[in-house]
Amino acid sequence: MTMAPYVAEFSGTFMLAVCFQQWFVAQSDDEKVMSFRPLAYTAYASLYMALIYTLESISGAHFNPAVTLCTYLTGKNKELKNVFSYWVCQFGAGIIANLLCGVLGAGRAGPDKGDYYDHNITISSLCEVIYSGLLCFVVLNVACSYENMGNYYYGIAIGFAVLAGGYASCAEASPAFNPAVSLGIDLAFGLPIGILHGLRCICCNFVGAALAAVLYWAIRPKEFDREEAAESVFPKCMAEFVGTFLLTMTVLLAVVTEPAFASWAAMACLVSLTYALNTVSGSHFNPALSLGVMLSGRDKLARVDCVTFIALQISAGALAGLITGITAQIGGIDMKEVQMAVAEKSMGILDLRPEIKNAMFAEVIFTAALVFGFLASTTTRLIWSTFHFGVASAGALAPAVVTIGTASGSALNPAIAMGLAATEFLYHPQGIHPGKWLCWVLAQTIGGCIGSLGFRFLYWREFEERIIPLVSENEGGAEVGSLVGGNENADRWVGWQGERPGQYAYRNKERSCTGCRSM
Image (tube, rainbow, N blue to C red):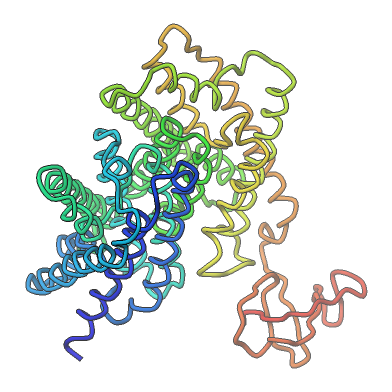
């Protein structure tokens, strides 16, 4: 019983290390093979997700020294001896995994330093800090927070955080966001490059963990018995600023390194952050979304809070754009390439060619779908679930990738558009024009209004003073649209009850409630 958590940590970290290191040990330095590097992060994140769901009840499913550190800093793991015990298991698993991969792959092409180290150190360090911090921050919110106890999405949220970091950084770096996983490869290369790289990764990962702990302390004051701070608006504002900043940084890092992955990185990051911060601020991270929530009524978002959220979101987008641009300049990324990447995603709007008009139209449509999906999945009292809302609210980005990803970057977010404008400003100050950003803001604002109006029309019962219940054969009640199983109304025929007994709101209208929640 006492050894089970440590065996679980060793086993989980070992499997993650094998998954990550086997890519560099077993694969050759073929351009065609290395072009599938993003799939390595898909496999890495998927395995992480599976291990979390299977071993979380045994050890907490850290599998990462940075995660163990952030749980200690926030008081979730108060025993310092447990921290060092976990570290021994995690680092030991990484070293042993590398030794086994090296022995088994002795007859094949070994890891090439160019594949692992010949990347931009500045971008690599920034990605290690940001996405180690994102991973730790998401773990604290979905797996350690009292407000999110009993949820079923913690594994998905953590896995998507890893996936977002992989897609955003794989073109300029090969970070594992886990010092135990990368340590084995570092030791294989030896002095000086391997040891120096290992020390840099550990420092970056631990800095990200410390930042995550500080943000968690500021955003969730109830976890630390800070009742006065919990009653203020500061945690909500902080959550919106941090979430928008991380989302915009993910998009911009992908744009300046590998634009083809920008939208997929954004979708993964949005899913992860939506699950992490929904119980704090509602997880908007988008001025068009905040506007849509306010216009949907029902006192879901006050006007003052809406204006405050929008100002913070735009500011976070601009800050992310400036940091990305400065980092890219320091890292020596070609200014012309960055300018072309940004231009393809957000600029040239005033040149109203047919393809630009089509992109603007698509931006309106998919922003409306994004807003409607968010309102329907996270704000309605007719649909209750603890699982689907994060995937549903970010689902509009997936079709946007296919349809308008090349033309506009499928930002669907004025804050991201502001970040793109700020990044271009650093590279080409004379070419920037406020009208370019305002065009995107106008399209996305119109989309937000359309999504909100569609919600008010289709979900009209949300605005009724009294919920009209459903009646079943045994006269038990069930709320319309509730699809949660395990109650007495499951698999029963129910009808729409009118104002008087025996009267139905729709003539001859019945529905099969395959899993309705009791009133």
